[in-house]
Image (cartoon, rainbow, N blue to C red):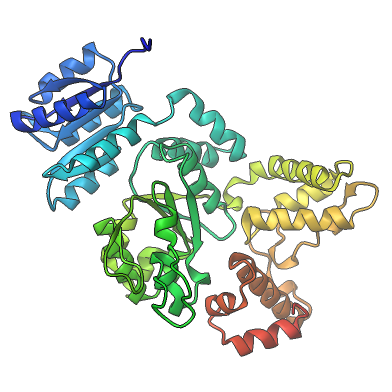
Length: 448
């Protein structure tokens, strides 16, 4: 016989009918409920009992649900709190998520949505294992990385949409994966999509799916990315590259929590957490009217900035050692060592491509080096980004302008190709080049 104690839920609402509905529904889920009519009663119960989840109304006779969220954040930050708000109070719900709420429900409460939210909250990992797991995947002892790990730990316990900002190659997708893996959706799909790599004419079909015969080439029904991510997380990388027409459809899908496939007659309910990222300044894109303001506010409930490698130079040695160990394991060769001058060169390099560029530099040097020792010359670092103090090199040192410009062009094209997984059409769009011009440059630079 199972004698494990039932999980405890705190219900805070001044309406008897709502309290009774929640008590009956959660009781049928084999959960033990405690009810409070106001903020004072809730705080008293929190002093006496340990709870696994708190459901609170926004408006209380002696305060607000936001005050209760803040109280719990100070006292027990690992206790998930879900806010119950009036229908249409989106701004209130967003404020609750920013304050630390796990998720929100709107009145009238839909029981399937309630049961789904409660089950999700109760699947949250316990406080003990979070930071250790994040540290294993996100290397570095610098203060910026310590702050980032702390933020990931907190955001993993929420269902709030997160906008991950940072330079190309800084590790935005890894941060998104960690948020997913440390949260209640960890056992469900994590679906990453590079928005800049999808041709505009196929975008709606890719996101929402299509029905057989809906267009030429649609020989069978195909689910979209939203359906594939159902129950889990959809990560929209380079979201700023979405055309305005697609932004409208994406906004509706997020608001309605439902999608309609191309050629379909009915909408399909989808439950996904949205995480997004871009190396562009999304606020500047809104100001330039290239990105919808209403979608920006839905995606940017919480912003998480990933530091560049230049901001955490103290981590370069640890990252380099980790990459060299991985290369030795992958190739079956003895681990290469970094000559002190090579390490110093890495620390004095600007790394415009961040961690991704560091990995590429070391992979090339690992192949070129002799006697398993990587010398400074094996790194083949671009002189324009090599400095003694982290600042850009003096352009007056350039001997041949044509060679320098060609090296910059090569670097930008390679970076665009890497970011688009070597999709030449998408890379050309990112660089504002025609495909014909892109093909010419690739041939000229010997990259075709």
